[in-house]
Image (tube, rainbow, N blue to C red; front, side, top):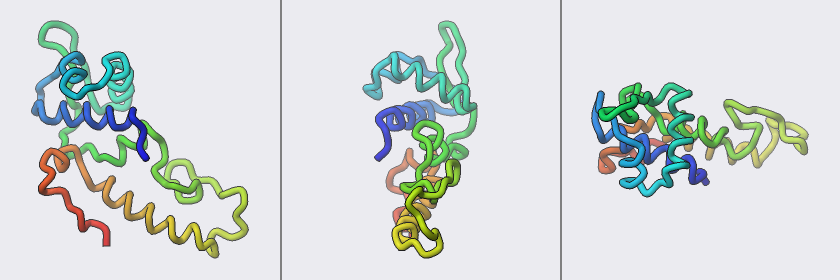
Length: 146
């Protein structure tokens, strides 16, 4: 399961994507529209800003806006930033690989083989689905995993 923080981050990014290129939104607006606690949203947006996904401006016309186009921001990269590895087993992680403590032989591990398929399918969807894709739910590919 993804964390509540990751859900909030994704909802905030989708809200910014809906605003349009070069348009900014105030934290209070996003908080209200997306039902995200304002203090928590501030922390999330700062983390997204440090990672280069959003920028901020002060003042009456200020707020947050996307730095990259919605087509360039993939769900997988946001989940990894906020929640860490996507893989259900440490031996399958792209960013935090480590051998399972109780593993005798990764190549012969039946559990690893099953969860490797799950991990690859999950990555395929998350790493190919952008914020722009998610704006039109009808166009989301559900058969991307074969």
